[in-house]
Image (cartoon, rainbow, N blue to C red; front, side, top):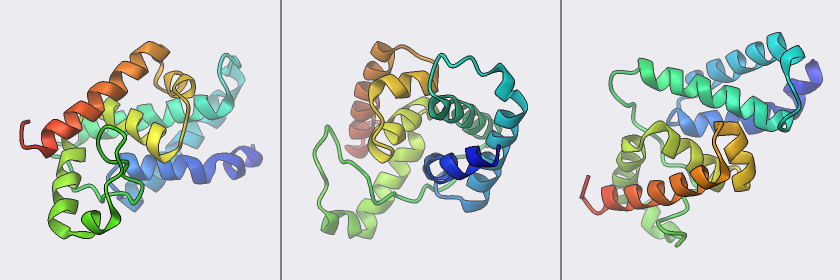
Length: 162
């Protein structure tokens, strides 16, 4: 059981940290809850997906629960990995500008949780669509569609058209 935490803690923390807007304590609490749930239910793990995908699915549900409890979205720290819009990279010097960082931060917080989850798994963790589908409990086509809509929505928000 200790091996489970050692093997997946860093990646799980990184994922959750980006989902909760860079709030360290929130991320730590959710990761801890994720491992507690996983350890309690490991006997029910059916091996229909990888253990990593199963863990990220539990974490994703914990993050959704957290967002449901929050009345207003907290300020999200713009991750360094931010992929830009439509696959185009945003130059680092542009991201360094505080007004751009603030605008992107606000746009990210305005996205629905499933959009944030898909984007973080794809662009932060570098997961293939099939693994994202497993973690989110959706089909590959659904995830591909979510990613397209999430990028469009993010672009629209950034262009001022909520």
